[in-house]
Length: 345
Ligand code: P6P
Image 1 (cartoon, rainbow, N blue to C red):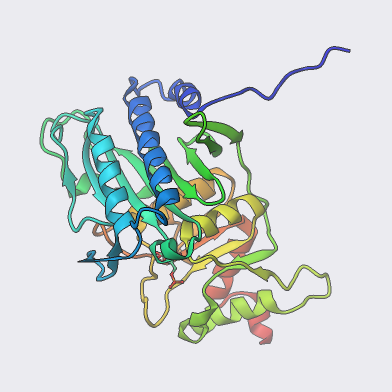
Image 2 (cartoon, helix red, strand yellow):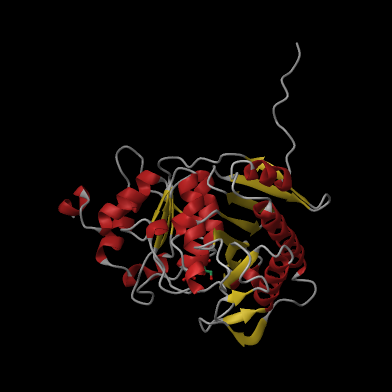
């Protein structure tokens, strides 16, 4: 009996070319940018894995805009991405967690695309060999046909304007997960080939999960409603749907990736120390929110859809509640004090 062969062998370059066909207005620039980005991610992956050997670890004397000591891998990864993005000439302006201000490229008045990125999310986990990652988002300029120099307004666009978004994960293997608005697809890096190979296509989030991901150490810093939500999902229920399991790595992109695959909810809410949450909307929350939504999930600041929020500045923080649609909606109802269980408590 003949077999039907269906699992095609697809590299990220093949897939980007296919995605390009879904964006008839993009004239190959899109493909060129994403291919240059994957080169940067391959370089970062190589050096993250080598970090323990060539003394790249440890703190530098520098601190970034947030007063956090910058680890050498952060600055290195930042430089790799910026330099890779100059090659195509299709990027006019960039914003990075590691740069105080916007970054203009030599084609700042000609190119149509804008890159926002966190070169190495999870820095605090670098020295303890826990998964870290790179987060990126790609916009078109507000006026792609302008011959004026790009400005910060091209960077602080709302997330629903993103043309593409995704992340790389440097864990037990190196993964690349991305979307161009047509589903979420995952690729696993084969260092012997130097290729990202398609391993999951059209990832879909379960409507409800069984785990929550939050730093419970801040429990007494949260609002009363947030505490009631977490108490609720930890309380055993007769239908055995609760308690949820707690899973928290401390690298947002890794916690989001597990939530994307298994379902459940990721929370970095506001607290007394972080009145606007800790994550940055421009180069972290927006890209993660686009991935979660494209996989059928929901991402809000506890009230408003993340992708609808217009950032005020490139380093603006935002609370992030993201994951399975039913879990996020349930959390939002607690945060508004509207959940039926809050009438009983
Ligand atoms: P906390 C990593 O430094 C990061 O920015 C996110 O990746 C992560 O989710 C968060 O901080 C962890 O913060 O306060 O739980 O240590």
